[in-house]
Length: 206
Image (tube, rainbow, N blue to C red; front, side):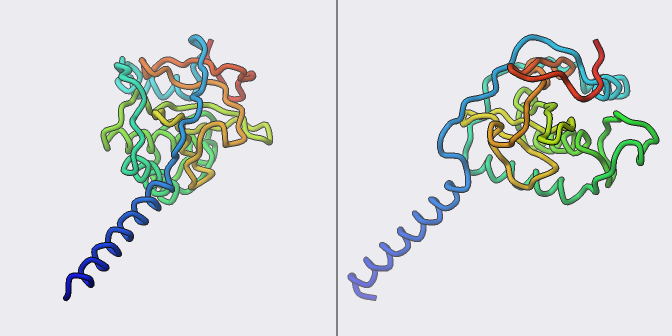
């Protein structure tokens, strides 16, 4: 291969690498979005309260808040992979059909409702090295008025949502939901209000 051919090939390979890198990163957020504004401590959802009675160690972790996760192409891929994998692995079923009563939060065994998807995604992301201070169970109101639970992931590009109703990972303010409350970032058993939220639609303890 002559020098001009080698130069053309090197240029082509560099171009392919640049395009591949650009495509990989373009799938992740390029611009930081404003994070949620949280208020003071608020009531704990009844389902989470009951979950904590069964799993007390899960709800007594005082997490050190070192700030949001740094968004990278690798982290974005992890969020996408975990969201899709858990959504595919669990068959949706409401608590009453599974347990004979409502508001049961539990790690799913093949079936579950929205809170169970959230618990599994949170566990999976923690196992991949993300801090619990950035993996926050969140209660929202859907457009039809129904209460719903999602997982919020805090990053330096904004707060992102993993949702069993969508395989797309979205910025929190691009979901169409009204955000009500979420876990505190410094204690897994405490909850904080989200500013401009409305009255919660899931049962809470006072």
